[in-house]
Length: 199
Image (cartoon, rainbow, N blue to C red; front, side, top):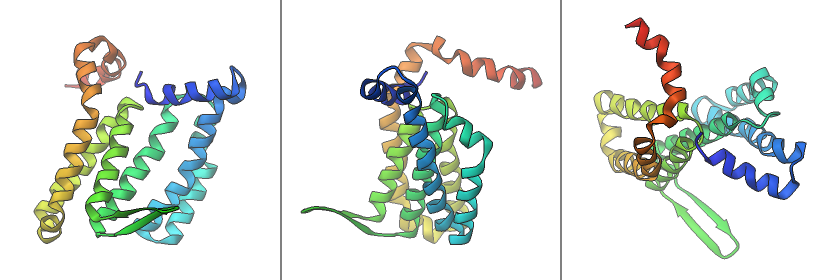
């Protein structure tokens, strides 16, 4: 298994002990966090009403509620993917912001948004194997921009390069580990059987 969720859950177990809270608190926290992130991304892409409807639907969804109650690593993937897409879109728009914590100030440029997106994409790789397909979605979208929105692509190409490079570099330890331990991919091979037989 990808280790990020289990590492975070170990901290929860150290904090609460081997109890129901120790096992489930991280999932509850992540499931709850997914709701406002859904609103933020929905508002960014389609407006406040769509964001509210999407967040409300997620909050009432059986699957969302179920995974938020049990200690499985799947629940970490949605908030990471939502955050990655949100910051990608901010970078695409050229939004600039400023984070202030006491006397510490961090300016966030368009490139900075792409790099934050890359961080969340890479963290997703350490969460669940399905997250490996998420960068491909953004790369395909970047390819679409190169073909049909060249002026926007030309303005943001540095951010796109940064996104791909940082995601690849941060994912490299996992990639190398999987190459050295191919038996750890047994679950992927198991799920691929129907696709192989369909050829």
